[in-house]
Length: 112
Length: 116
Image (cartoon, rainbow over all chains, first blue to last red):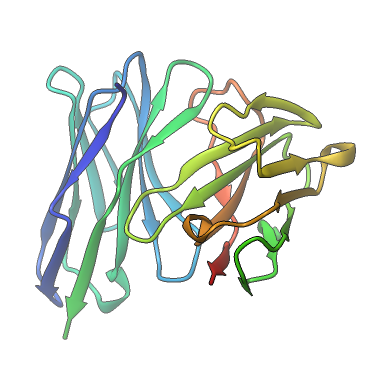
């Protein structure tokens, strides 16, 4: 069964600190992996997209890594800000038809 | 560029009532998606349209849910009759095309449905 699992479920960090969110998947065939940020009460917004051949991609203070052999990805947030408080959702695209399998998300709270 | 628009933003109904949600995708986007997001979970695809044709509706509870995309632009999602377990946020998303491996989906703000 195609699944995407994320950890931790929730995380609290202090402003200015770094953190890393994890994503494991069993989706096959694999097309690409995306990280989305979802603010409370809003729709998800794409942060990064990585295909099979890419193992790292950055978007500002967000850096995503992908290990297609172990089927793991991580999202590293550097120098966190209060505005980083949100849910971060790992999404894996199945096959070539852009069918997305969503993880349950990691809820991040950044405290001053 | 205007984003994906959805209305209403919030809806409260009693079980067995009917409800409809509306979505206006980004102009020029051929593909439109409806997702259901239950609290604490990731979104689940209900139906995917390319232009006005259905690409995937395998997870749509067809006994009570229906969706249409007339003229390949706006779309409506209807629930009739609603059940308690339908309480969720209904997200609409659009993308430029289907089949593109890295085609980005742009999401609307969602409609939060509460069924009492």
